[in-house]
Amino acid sequence: MSKIAKTAPGKIILFGEHAVVYGQPAIAVPVTQVQAKAIVSPDIHADPGSIRIEAPQIELKSPLADLAIDDALALAVTLTLKYLEITRPPAFKLKVTSTIPLAAGLGSGAAVSVSVIRAVSEFLGQVLDNETVNTLAYEVEKLHHGTPSGIDNTVVTYAQPVYFVRGQTMETFAVSRDFTIVIGDTGVFSPTSSTVGDVRSGWEASQEKYDLLFENIGTLSQKARPAIEQGETEVLGELMNANHAHLVKMGVSCPELDSLVQVARDAGALGAKLSGGGRGGNMITLVRPDDADAMARTLTEAGATNTIITRVGT
Image 1 (cartoon, rainbow, N blue to C red):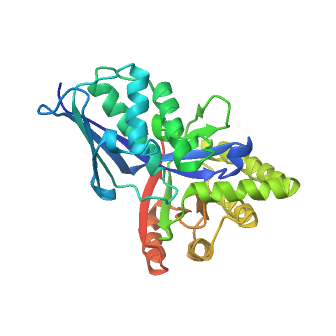
Image 2: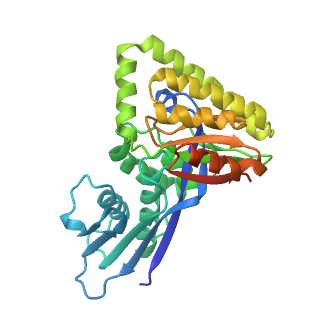
């Protein structure tokens, strides 16, 4: 058996954070400038069934058997082996690296899972189709997010812009004209599962208020799809601004996000909003292509700890 390496991109949610969990549509796109990578290589000196996992960025180096059952990397491997009906695989080593910032709304967990599932399954002689990879990655997402929408694993698996409604068939759609997004990281660590849980608690306490917020966000997602398909970037920017306002009312923004969003708008952005779970992590700003570098510098000067420029297109 030869060494197998697989990668998976990051992602950003353009519209529909949190509302997507409650049946509203969301739009997400891949961010190919960052990625997770999984490398599986044979361990010729180990006994069959031996699996060693290494993830330098989280200082992990351990046999699979010694990892907790709720460890995300262990679960991705275990679910893949179970699906393939392999109980004693040839000994192998799995190394995972990633350039995707953690807990920043960029789909790092989903990207790691997808790359691991693909690398392990191909090393063992089976190339899984996208639907199967997506299903397995979703099971791992439950560890990261508690009640995941499924959008992270879907857009990362298919590596295409998607229009997503939970429980319905995923739809990819055309981007008629490339548009440019600058991502700004607040540097504030914020696990998505925490904000998802808080939104759930808020909804249980005040369902009428939250249902209205979810519906309004869903309407924005519905309007955003044709704007993207028709290349109407100014309309898209206005919809992003409105989406952020609803997320603020939902209580999932934070001063650092609001500050960067306002700085971006003051600097001429077509639109800006938080992206992902909120209360930290990343914000995104829609800019004209020629303004991307200047916007990245402006966000950095305003306190962003990292910026990524990505082009979304065909």
